[in-house]
Image (spheres, one colour):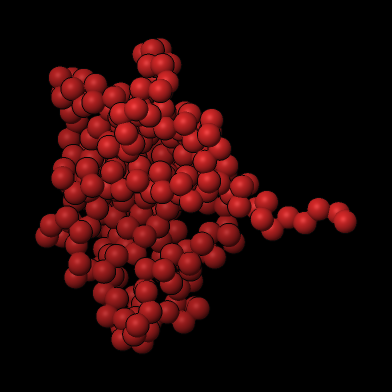
Amino acid sequence: MLFERSLRTSLPILRPRTWPRFIYHKSLEPNIWTETGKMNKLVSNSLQLIAWNYIRFMQRVGLPIPDDCIRDIFVHGSTTNYYYDENSDIDICIVADLSPMREKLAGIDLRTIIKSMLGAWLRKYRIRVCGRGIDIEVVEVTTPMYGPDMYKVGSAYSIARDEWIRRAERLTDEQFHTIRAEAKRQYREIYHMYRQICRENMQPDFIDTFLQRLMADRKASYAAHPEQPVTAETMAFRMARRRGIQRTLGERATKMRSRSFNVEKP
């Protein structure tokens, strides 16, 4: 549990009308997908251009990641599934043989280096595809996370091969309502803790721990259900995001830390 029962019951129970919605569509995002389930060609070409531009950037700054080490480029996440909303980014995953990089940069955390490169690259551009932001991750071909050739949970579409790796499976109404009932309970806990943090002016380290726990719970649910990412934890996390809880707490922690560096006029 995120916190003790005494804290969970310290605030009134939210009425259903105050709960943010978890959007679950009957069809895939029409700006990205055709009626036959293939990715729109213009979108696919744009995403490939973006991915290869980032690869070229890594090559220019000296990271040893030659073209023949790229094994696949696929899209995953909510925009390949039925639970996309206005906040959904298009998530790109580049599967690569990172052994040349590992040999040259022995002892260095490659994930941190690659993520830093992505931050530097994104600061140069304002990239939007179908009105959505872009997130990119590079993964090692030899270390799938959830099973053979399964680097990300849920549905995935290879833009390199223009075909589904795993098609999205839509929940039945009964399955959806069961999961949503549990998600509402979890969201209520999140919201109560959010109110507790604000009311008691809790410190940034506590806020960080709380936000990290939310992310960890969601990832743990992915590991338990890698084929179907629509879990109660996913719903509760996204409901909290729609309410702005993660953003508000993140900004609150940043402001509190910034005070330590501010100097008033003498």
